[in-house]
Image (cartoon, rainbow, N blue to C red; front, side, top):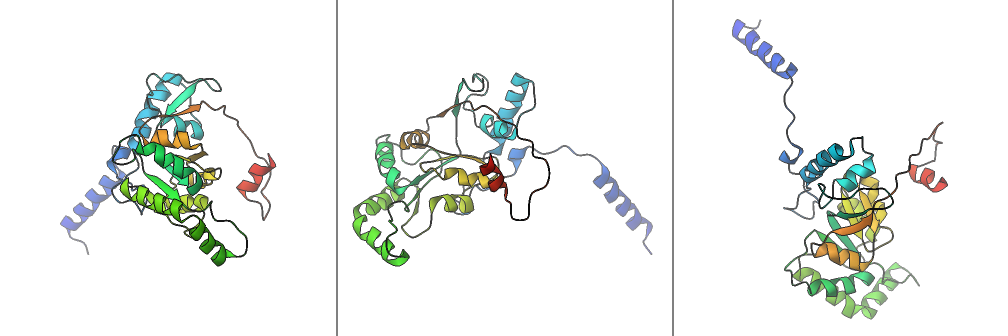
Length: 250
């Protein structure tokens, strides 16, 4: 049997569990952006602070896409927000570049005189590999033909603290999904398949090299405020249907 003291302790513990407690700030918990980048954390507190300002300004509920975009505004107090008209100045969380576009992007970034990129950045060597014979031979041929390019990318990324995925490491859009995507984030990449990272609940957009350099050099990324489209699905999804398939049907 429990003693009086044990019963009192158990009751006090139960009462503490039932009492409402103030929720901690979202920024109180550090969430690492990627397992490959120790010491770099997701700035969820900035997103939450921005949204508090935007909710007060707009006076209406926000869609998920709006929460992610407006959560990354450079100046939430003064930013003009009108769908389809305003140009938003945004602060993406990270940048990804493929080997063809990364060359000029890195050359331009080097002229900024910065010791490292303003946001985590990666370079992925996959676009210069031509599919001709088979994986092994095609990779060897690409490494031989593009040796000067790969050497430049490897040394430049090492100097500026940029992640480097060498030839044969994999395809950029799958690598960023598996290693760098996270819910609520905003990423830009110099590859048309960058939106693949949206599979984990972030907004990921393909851009040109100049846009990537701006963000790497701590300049806000400008994007026309998108129009929001609501879609209501009825019925039931078939056995082999995926959300991606539903999207394509539109």
